[in-house]
Image 1 (spheres, one colour):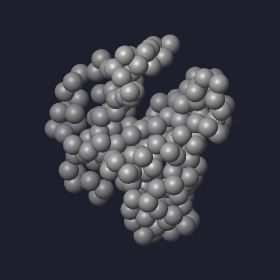
Image 2: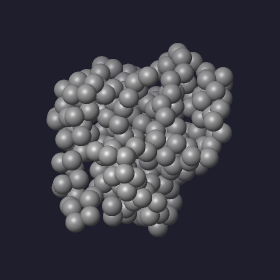
Image 3: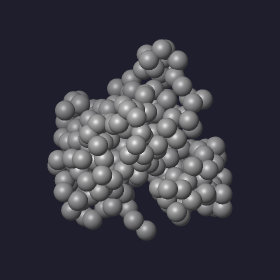
Image 4: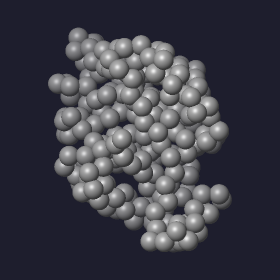
Length: 237
């Protein structure tokens, strides 16, 4: 089993977004020093306690602050964006940090629906087009003859990870032949056999010939068990 970190850049009470980002970079360095496999950052909007709203920007800083650990988005909320724009952003990152970048995508709003309407280019998030957007993104990243060509050109495509917290996301990941990350910290009541379902229905693809899974859970670290319990109470607010 490989351990990784998904960091949401939380803003401490009395702290600032700048401090939150500096703590994210410090955590990334420590994760690399402790041989963690991946370090991902999230996308949240109108969340006053979380600073991470643009993972594609923050990843550039995380990559510069580290040397070998894999870095990635956990994830890009694809229904808000042009697949072409996302492909180009991650082409830049992949050229900066070859063989280190993961492109995690999800369909969740990442915030409240009012914010979702503002984020969407025409005021209507394209949640129902998510499967199509994922397929388009994969074609743009893999097909060297795709027109118009993404800039800068890629020599190797970043792997796309499907993020989700429902059976529907597992089914889509299996059908498209994509690695699957299940967000247990969002939905702790899901069928425990969801990975079994994903593996059973997995269809090999150009990106992945075998199923790959990742489970994301909440973790509270402290010097003592009692202090960890106290810190965990903030998760219930």
